Length: 410
Ligand SMILES: Nc1nc2c(ncn2[C@@H]2O[C@H](COP(=O)(O)OP(=O)(O)OP(=O)(O)O)[C@@H](O)[C@H]2O)c(=O)[nH]1
Ligand SMILES: [Mg+2]
Figure 1: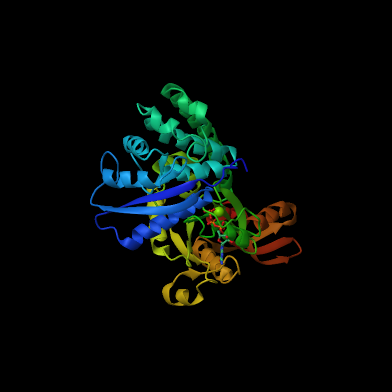
Figure 2 (figure 1 turned 90 degrees about the vertical axis):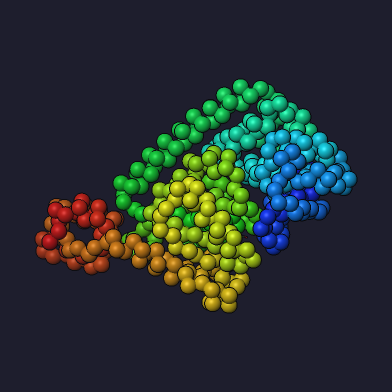
């Protein structure tokens, strides 16, 4: 990998405001530590300050910042769990005399490391530039201080130093590129709509097991890893619910608490796939100690992107917590790894769409056998019988197929 840095010593900082509970802060920090480790950093220690509201100049109190300055050495990195204003970021790095970044920038950086596809790269760069733009104004020092390593990946140093006008132009170009991506996606989508095959989208917190589930259900082999944000792109596969009855199943980028707005905005082309699905499968890591907060975070992002479709909750990794799930989960408890209960999940999805199907009887005279073939492609055939004059087929069809085939109905 390009990132051959020696793991940089890193300190994490969180502000415990108002009603925030201890465990909440702890779980946020644990997740931040995981993100940092995923980015190749070495977390040394973390600091929490209780305050009713953030200091407008330094986010944490100035005294606490000076305390940090005592501990942090040159070349170390400090990461705040909340988004800092450009001024706060500048003041803090001046006070602490080390680069200071926030959760948003760390997540952007991880996305930059992971982005593989052209579309992913465009979206990440767009998010990074939108994040950087306000931070370039007036406060050049805060950025030049960052030096190499984390927080400077992506647009690259030379680009950071160029004026805002060039960045704005780049943003415009990237948006134009993305518009092309969206248009071609819309075209593909229209193709799928013409076939009237329903689309089911996997959504969920990062690392919940969405890609593993896609692989298990559709017998494919997309990338799976025990790391945050293993998937950044949308993959779509055919999933056979029952003989002759297909849906499309799509896998996409996972969500996280405090998902940066710049990312949500930039990843619109990718996330849009979710909003066009007919049904969402919300994959939950049932073994995670904070699965409830993760569920909440997913609901928030779904609301933010305007996804309002019906949802089936899928409690995954049941192999790790078999007993807890029996008690807690009235929904689907499955294991993408062992395959437990996947048949039941498949049936639930089938039943969801079954209401749209009707059973009809058709007759195709021999000269029209081509049409019979088309019906077999589009529908679940229940019975088929050849007669002296042609073929009789009983099939379960969706509305569109019913209307296309109406001429052959008995
Ligand atoms: N024990 C167990 N582990 C699982 C199960 N499903 C997935 N995993 C593991 O959980 C980790 C994350 O799985 P992924 O499928 O990459 O998760 P994802 O939701 O696609 O994650 P992102 O793409 O990062 O959002 C991997 O190490 C998987 O092997 C399961 O049912 N049981
Ligand atoms: Mg994935």
